[in-house]
Structure formats: C-alpha cells, structure tokens
Amino acid sequence: MSEISDRYRRIAAAFTERVHAVPAGAWDNPAPCEGWVARDVVGHMVEWMPHLLKDAAGIELPAGPSAAEDPVGAWDTMNAGLQAVLDDPDVDRHNFVNEHIGTMPVSQAVNMIMVNDVFLHTWDLARATGLDETLDPDEAAAMFAGMEPMDEMLRNSGQYGPRVAVPDDADAQTKLMAFIGRQV
Image (tube, rainbow, N blue to C red):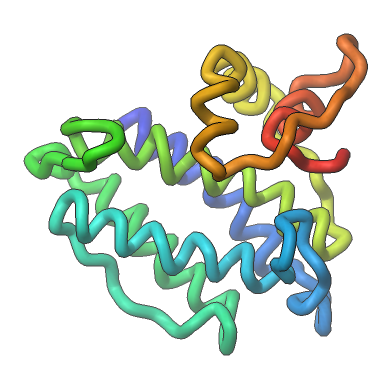
C-alpha cells in the first residue's frame, strides 16, 4: 500500500470514529461552517468528493444513501470507495485533470485536496456534536506549515473564512483551525 493510501486510512479513521459516535439527535446541531449542521459536514464530503473524482479522473465511487437521510451510511459508503481507489496499485494509471491545479496522478490529487478536507472537517464534526476535537498534532503542524505561505490565495478562493487571531504560542491545531477561520 502506498503512503497516500495509509495517510487517508489514518485520517479517515479519525473522521469515521466521530461519525459513528455522534449522539442521537446531534446530527442537526449547528456546525462551525456558517449555515451548516453536523450532517452537512458529512454531506459536503460525500457530495463533492465523488463528483470531483469522476469529473477530473473518470473514476466513479459507489453510490450510497444521502447524508440527509443516513449520514453514517453515506460516509461509510464513500469512505470505503475512496479507500479502495487508493489501495489499487494501479490508481495512478489515471490522471487527475483540473483547470485550477493542472494534471497530476490521482493519488497525489486526492492527498492534496480530499485527505486534507477530511482532516479539517473532523474538527468541525466533533465541535458540532460535542465529541473529542483533538486532531493529529503532526498532521496539523504539517498542514498549517503548508497552508500559511498560501494565505492570500487560499483566502481568495472563498473556501475559508477570515483568519482568527490566536496567541503565537498556540498549539498547531489551534493555529490551523484559526487559520481557516474557525472560532477556537
């Protein structure tokens, strides 16, 4: 298995753990993303990730239930499908072609875009549902270090809110979440 497949497995496992631990009735709790509830965090990923993979690489993931009706089933189906794609030793026989990031191997694109999204939204789901918000500190530090130099570009993408000020001595997770506009 590849390093990217292993990274996705690790990060998705943390998200999956939270998905399966959401307390009864908490799927409609407000999420940190404006206008979203907890189930929308799952819905966001199970809707855009398969479409992007199909449009950019011609890879179709299995269809599951909607996150509106069954967020756990929706996530589990999409997650298993994406993991199977990454576990395929021939995954990079496909190119990922996107006007914004160019052409690259599928695994590299999934790692850069989708794996990072799962990591960040783990915190959102946990915050919305009262679960453990702790993220892998090494992943958080690496992600923050990689994103901070691209501040203006990322901010202009409209994907992130205004940066929230935190003390210089804040831990990597706090810096990362504040960087993407989350109130920590």
